[in-house]
Structure formats: C-alpha cells, structure tokens
Image: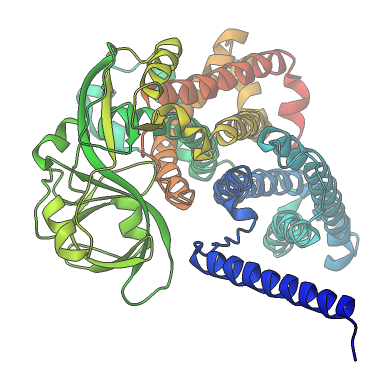
Length: 583
C-alpha cells in the first residue's frame, strides 16, 4: 500500500504534467495561427554590384568583337604593303640569283623565313603583352566593392587566332608577290619595272574645273589615278582608322546620353513617394506637381515561346490623362505620342525586344502571387529600365484585386542635391510616407560608368594605328617613286615644291579617307551599340558633331606630322644614285 506521502507526490507530478501539456497545446495553437515564414533564395546575380559588373562586361565584350577585327584588317593591309614592297625592291637580286641557277624555292626561302619570323614574333609579343596589360587596366576601371581581386588568364585560343592571322598577312603577301615575280624571266627581273603610263582621267572631261587648275595640281590628280592600288589602299587605311575613332567617340556619346535622354526626353518626374494611403497628398515647398499612381515591381514573361523573365516596373496612373505630363509615351513605329487606353498596356522598347512582343501580343505579368494576362497595345521608346503602363480600368479587368494607387510621382522645382535631401527629410516626417526615391540620381547601377572610360583606350589605339598607317603608306609611296622625285629635283624643283608635289596627293587621299571613314564609323557605332545592349539598357544611337571634328582633326594632324617627316626625307634624296639605280 502506497503511503499518503507517495500518493500526494504522484498527484502533484500528474498535475505538473497536465499543466505542461496545456501550455504546449496553447503554444502549438498560437504557432499555427502565426503567419508562415517566407524564405527567399537569391544568387549573386541579385547583388547590384555583381550585376553592374556583368552588364558592363557584356557591353565591353560587344566592343571587343568589332575593334580587334578592324585593327587586324588594317594591320594586314599595312603588312601586305610592306612585304610586297620589300620583295619588289629586290627584283634585281632575285633576277640575278635566277640567272646564276638558284631554284625558285631557294630564292623564296629568304622571304618566307623573314615573313614567318615577323608573323610569329609580332603575334606572340603583341598577344602576350596585350593580354597582360589591357585586361588588367580595364578591370581596374570596372572593379567595385564586390570585385577587387584581378585574376589574369592568357587566352591562348585568341593568341593562336592572332598568330594565324599574322602569318596569313606576312606569309600570304610574300607568297603572292613571289609567285608573280618568279614567273618572269631573269632578264626581265634584272630590269627596272617600267612606270605606269599616264591616262586621261575623269576630271579632264570636266573642262570648267580642269582648265582652272595649275600644272602642279593637274600632275597630282593624274598621279593619284595612275597608281590606283596605292590610292585605294591609302583611302581604305585612313578610312578604317578614322572610322574606328568616330565609332569610339560615338560610343562615348551614346553612353553619356543614356541618363539625360531617359530623364529629359522620356521621364519628366524627378521623385517617387511611396505611401500607405496614396489618396493623401504630400506637401513641400520644392514640389511643383504630383500625381497618384500604382507603382509596383512585377515579373513579365511571354505567354508562349521563350521562357525569359524580366523584372518590370508597372505604372498605372490614377488619372491617365495626366501621365503625358510625367512620362512621354512615343511610339517606336510611328514616332507619334501614345495614349493609354482600356484595351491593353504600353510596354517599353527593350522589354518588347526581350519578350519578342509587338502590338497585339499577350504577356504574363506576375504581381505578388497573382498572375495577370495583359495585351500589348503599344510599344514606347525608353532607354533605361523596363516599364509597363496601364489604366486603372484595365488593371481591374485583368486583376482579381481592386486598383489602389501606392505612390505619388513628383515634379520638383529644384533638383540640387541639398534641396533633394531637404525635401526627403521633410516628406519622411509626414504621416503615411514610407519611402522617397529619385530615379535619376539612383541610376548609377545602369552599368555604363566604366564603359565610357574603356572607350578612350580604343580611341587612343585607333589614333596610334592611324599614324602608323599614314607613315607606312607615305614611305612606300616615296620609295616607289624615288626616280620620279629625283627627276623633278634635277629639273629645278625646290625642296618645298617637291614636298608639295607629294603632300598634295596625301591631302586629297586623307580628305577622301576621312569622308569614307565617317560612313564606316557610323555603321560600326550602330552595330556595336545594338550588340552592347544588355539587361534593361537601350543605348541612344547618337554621335555628336565633336566626334566628327576630332576624328578628322586627329587624322589631319597625323597627316601633317607625316608630311613634316617626309619633307626632311625628300630634302636628302641622293639624285645621282636614284637616277643611276637601274643602270
């Protein structure tokens, strides 16, 4: 029989257990009533700093596809000219060796080895030096708080491609010229190649213009058209360099115009105030005008086809007729002003491109946990960000929830930094104000800061290439016409007149190259900027007049510098040796 003490202890323990069970039951009930936790998983692409870097990298990659190709083309042109001239200069030596019984293969070996060494050493040195310096320099311009450690990688595949291109330029040009020369007889090779005969040119048929030219001008224009190959190569070389420079200036203009065009031509409001009750107006002396609107971040995807998603800002103004005072909706097809209707939504141009959408297309828009099916009623111009505009009535048609504005769009009297901060502090003190943002001044995340700086590198390299092209082609021109220039010096031409004799042709070719270069630069610029469009950015295709001027002025300065160097070379021509060289 248990004692009275044991019975009391058992009852006390049972009571404690029962009380604990009741507490656990109440806690479980309270836990069930509590809202369920929502867990979000974000990868590093959700980090603004990483995304900025990736967007800028993609834009620079688009530029890197075009610029090296043009650099390589100009380099191949110059290399071909240099190697060809070297072999042409040794025609007598080649003819003498042929006459002495040397085989064509043995004679060719000297130039083949020279071409191979030049191609291999130049390609490897330039490739390795470029990959060790330029990427690190560009990375330092793009680096941010998230990416600060540079890890260099030598892209051997690209170096091999450059090596192959270099060998094609050097070895290919040598092979072509050797095949042409070695077909001739040794006696023909040992004789100086006869100069090209002069011909009547098109300008001679324009009598009013031709008759007003002096003798020196007529000779210069005849020489230009007599050496057509050299003329074409010079124009192409100068046009390529001018085009590269103009494309570089155009890229800088497009990048710099992105934010001003977005917030001057498209969006005319400066601030957005998020409110718990958007029907309530906010007050501040700096506010010029305001209008209520539903501003929400939504996820848009096509109803069929590609599964690509885009984060879009939905703007539904409470008074649609007032929207044009805050946002300019301009049709991409007609260029006319678009108006919101109850028949569909208006989306921005880059969003339409990404979603493969056009007028009449259906899109899926996810707002929170709700999925909306919307019809595209128009596409409007926009440069930064994805936007979707609709009327309150259309929102009520496609959504199960009732339209309710969330924000006010603000137009400010003063946009200075101090005034914006003062306005923000004042608004945040007012009841119902949850947040104040200024989109224009929060747009540093558009991924264009480093791109503008990198473009300056390409402009400088293009300018340097232009100098090399002009110097090389002018040297070839003088070496090919040494007997001609010596002859006119013997006939009594002064040094300045001999220089003008050559420089006059260079001026005409430079001007022609600049004009053609502008056309090439515009095509390059449009192609690069279309390829460089990443994320929600659509670059304006603008090239300002200083770009044309600077590309022309730099090319003209290089031509002038080469002309000065040429003048001193022409002053020291040994006339007797030049005239007796073929005897």
